[in-house]
Image 1 (cartoon, each protein chain N blue to C red):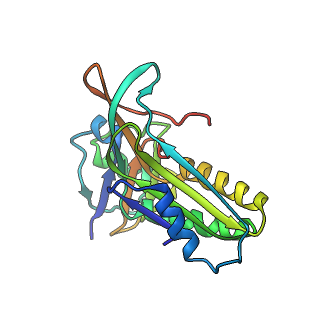
Image 2 (image 1 turned 90 degrees about the vertical axis):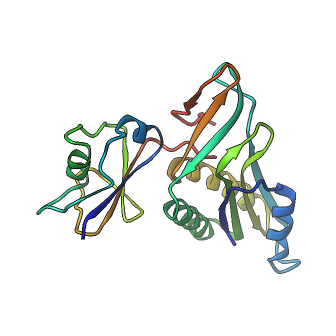
Image 3 (image 1 turned 180 degrees about the vertical axis):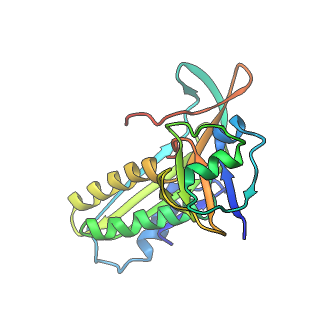
Length: 144
Length: 77
């Protein structure tokens, strides 16, 4: 399963192990991964949690398309995206991207590309809960 | 068949009374669907649009039975 969206918390190490186990043993020499984790502060305010909204069907389709494009664009065996939706707490992983390749360059490049593409294309929206009360929509991504 | 209208996140809160479906008209476009569904609100510049789950522009065509969605800039990851 190259791309998955779900409400359940996930463990990056478990996801990576399953991702690698599905590939031919010995066929790849490099695995690069990125984990995005929820912070407890944003734009100078303490944050106690957030809700990630998405557009069911379109989000899944866009992530699957990004993975398929990564396979075309980079010399990799496969790519992976796992993304949370729903209620998330500080310290919990939000997103995992990964790529396996024969050598490190393609894996690093593909992993970064997967992350940047999903941040620009996949329909997700964050609403964060503030420690001081109330909540607000996150209006834009950080530059990276 | 009516056009299904979906509005997400902060944009949904900006037009809470928008119609969830509307009838199609001749030479319909994404921007026209927004105007009719919201009772005449102008489509904000920064809004992203899709038709049947594919990213589209405001001037793109819409047909009977399409699912048209409007949403603010995405903030996943």
